[in-house]
Image (cartoon, rainbow, N blue to C red; front, side, top):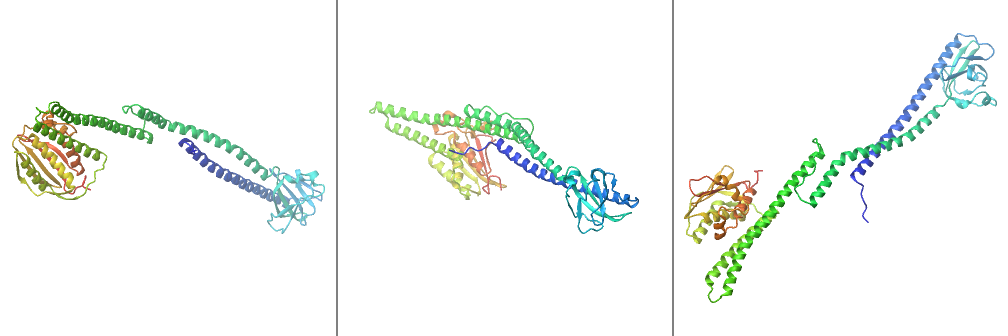
Length: 463
């Protein structure tokens, strides 16, 4: 069973949730660490301030022999002992009855190295677990040198940080769930046009190509995607219609010679004694050649449309091709051919394609000529130019562009009699396009003239 992959929406949501998780974890660790450092710094400052205040107070106060209750400084309590740390001289009111609470090591002007010492009865007097962030310094009193201890009294910093950490651990998953839900919803809104496009494309594929996908407003990626899909559907619809017309026209063109062949053979077979067999043979040869030419043209167009025509790039003399066509026309008809204006014109291209291009134009001209043809060749900048003129009836040049379309004839009835398939000039257009050129009828006083232009370097765009 194939593993089912997550949807884009699910993958993006998972990615963003994981990203938010990393950010929240980093933020939580940084927050807890920052709060802890801030609390420690604040507590140390408070303790230091209380010790200094106590030092100033004792410097101007005479201590009696009994314990003195000192004022409390916010959350800080102090305890003053003798220099040996064995007797309590004074203390803040919450711990005034407590015994010595800490032992100082290496006492100097600013010592904070201490250890709480729980004596036998101390727990009944004061909860030493509430004393944190202790500091100790020496102090001068009326009773002699002593030690002053300062402590934060109340909830410990560790407890506060633990509460903060618990709050983070509880709240961050809730934030993740909320963020995940919002991301899922937002992605759903963002991808809704894509889903609408998908449904429409699915319906178009199952019905026809005339429908188009909805285009959301704006100019974002989804709007551009919709416009691109509609442009593709336009091309597909045009291609589908072109293919249908091509198949219909090809079927019609193939049916005509086949019908003629079958009718000719059936007539001869029904009355073989009276049949004109030479005429029958000539009809079969003529229609067979027409079928062969039509099939060859159809095959060429099919390979061209699929871009399967293999081409070579060599030097080709267009003037030599024109001279060869002139000899061919003279040998197969009574039409005269004027080649006096043919000059050396060499281009880079495939000899087969260029020969077919010129032959198709010449065959078209022969079918319409009365008595003569005229060929020319020359250079025009980066282009090689060939013209083929006939002395026929001529055409409307403004409407001549359609003659280069497939299965279009200037005179359908006459072309069918003379073997035209309506594909020759469309093949010419395909070939000249390969070489960055053009094919067109030009204005002339009488008859018609086709002008072919191809790039001398054999490229499509000169690059």
